[in-house]
Image (cartoon, rainbow, N blue to C red; front, side, top):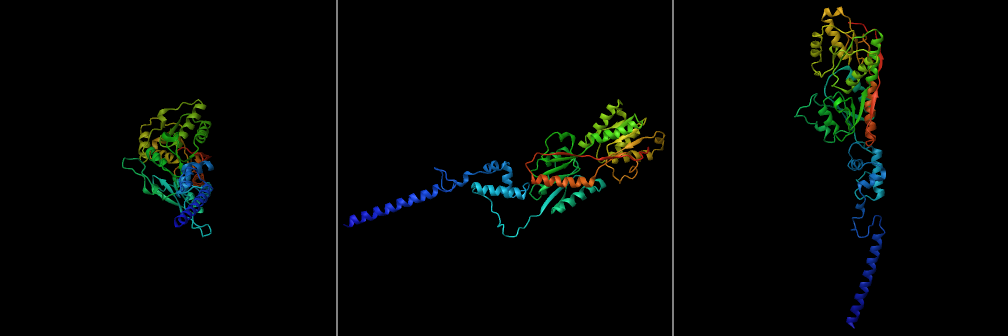
Length: 384
């Protein structure tokens, strides 16, 4: 009797246990993301970052940056990515603070990378306007210096590699090796000008150029229509893409009017950035006959020509008309006395800031090349 009672009790327990297992199985199989044959707890891991990226038509890298709070992803896009991750059942959605709590916005910082800490009016005007625009968006501007010339001991400043900045704007950096190193940074980037040797390579950032081809074409045309035929060109065309474009504009105009470009009147080879005056003076010392005019790559170069001629009275026997580019007031011996191109430095600074903001908000948009077109200032064009 006792044996029968125990058997019935045991059988009853087994029946209860069986129905409990059935209930648990039903609960598991009705959960979102359940995959028959998969481990319980591994179901949610079936959704990957690539799935989230595909659903939003963005890159996996952007999803990863959003999850890790890295720069290059706007707040709105990050929010969208996290919402989609939760919707798809991604198991590792990063913790986000309660939206009902006050939002403490992280201070953003942009690095301005320069190679020459000079106080030239042209550059300071650009930088000042850029800082103003970024400040309006509560973004700090941090100066970061790199050398003018690459050496084997060069390494990027740590501020650019430790996640301390949200983007970079590159000004007056014209060394190919250093530009290439900066281009490899995984940060939103905007470059003002570049060097001809990497212009046709794909910079990993947007490029702003001051238009020079058509502008210098017109400047040269003014000289030709004014009766000048022997016209030289002064400026290192290997230094910057903008310099090369200005030279090409000069050549195109001379060709259009059937005028020969005389090599003895042109100095276009590589010139040391710290020896411009010396190398120009040596060029003029060996100039047996002066041309009718010089198209100078910048007002900076034009002022050296005027300075040389003022110091050599014998040159006055052959008047030479000068042109420049930039329309800066700091070179007083040519300011207001030569044909030049007026670069709107303030607007250029604003444009650089806004372009970086766009790149930050749209990290996956195709890189852009934009041209800022200067106006031409026709002054009295007095011959020195």
